[in-house]
Amino acid sequence: MSRSARLVPACTSLLLALTLTACSGGDGNDSGSGSGSGAQGAVGASGVGDPYFPKAGNGGYDVSHYALRLSYDPDAEHLSGTATVTARATQDLSAFDLDLKGLDVAEVTVEGQKARWSRAGQELTVRPGGGLDKGETFEVRVRYSGTPQVITDPDGSEEGWLRTADGAVGLGEPTGSMAWFPGSHHPSDKASYDLVVTVPEGLQAVSNGELTGERTSGGRTTFTWRTAEPMASHAATLAVGAYEVRRSTAGDLPVYTAVAPGQEAASRKVLARLPEVMEWAEYNFGPYPFSSTGAIVGGEDDAGYALETQNRPFFPGAPDTGLLVHELVHQWFGDSVTPRAWRDMWLNEGFATYAEWLWEEDEGGDSAQETFDALYEHGEDRFEDLWSFPPAKPTSAAHISDEGPVYQRAAMVVHKIRQTVGDDAFYDIVQGWTAAHRHGNADTADFTAYVEKRAPDEDFDGIWSEWLYGEGKPEHR
Image (tube, rainbow, N blue to C red):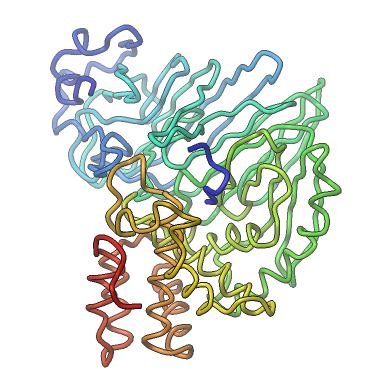
């Protein structure tokens, strides 16, 4: 993500299990044919316990696949859909939750049988008849519709379902995807995706992965997208609008770009460098982890930020080259190697920001050392929050992506590692890290342990204690 342009408790699941009517509230419902009364097992937790977003994700199961069949009418701002979620129970379950904000639920089934359900806030609690056994793979299907919501983050920025001049765009970091489909919306639960979306003829529907089908009938066009590699739900996107679509290649890699009206001329030159950036990134960070690449360029008013939506990052208006580098490098750091929790954001943003430094260095501009030195001496003049908290310890959910600590100071941590081990060992560490955790999740402890293991003769204690976890400006450059 690039934040440089970004605008800066309900009933518990246990109570829902015991007292449906009391907990459902004004927007609750209880429907279906499953009795639930004889179900064995516990109620899955209504969140995974993320310290900044405690209700994000859900306990008791792991999702492996989302199949979303959607229809969107921009004029009426109406979305209707059926989400089929394939998951495996990690405990005996009498009930489990899905995250869904707004929208009206018409029906829920589990393994083809109607299930009872209720709602409280962002929690859709599902009660399959007979329950689910630990280890059991199951399908839950939710039929829903309505006007998707815009979600305001703790930092004041907007995500979820954002209206555009001729359509809409779904952006999900950190919790916005629950505005347009139900799921376990936390980065620790990644899955593959199939998305079939129908829109008025003349509009495009652009998503992640590969476009496997396009069919027009009766004034409506249906697009079919497939994402085979695991994806965190916050990296999923759906952009509907009158985009200009171009297909090309970067070496053997397919490139799919979609550019909003009015942005074609401004985007052409920088998007032409996409193959060059990809080749440079692979040389530095290891093999590209996905089967295609590209970009979505929206209108300048579509969002206040760029976002690393998987294998096809989103930009609000034409990006410059530095921003293109940042979001493409996120495909390694953030999309393939995904943070285990939101406090680990610095692992995404620090590496993507440091990639901008490296690109500048390789293009004949300031070296990474010169950028580091300038930040150390005068960085607070540009980033007032640079030393406000350490990268690995954001002070609250409103600060998990603050520019100074989580981007710039985090990049300084990466540079300190490079200083310590030298270039050859540094790139071995970086490429080994992206390979070891490819398509998985990792946290700060995983990273520091990995660095120490790969460079056992070096002392990193000062870097961790002063730069990564230390309060205030480190004394030693």
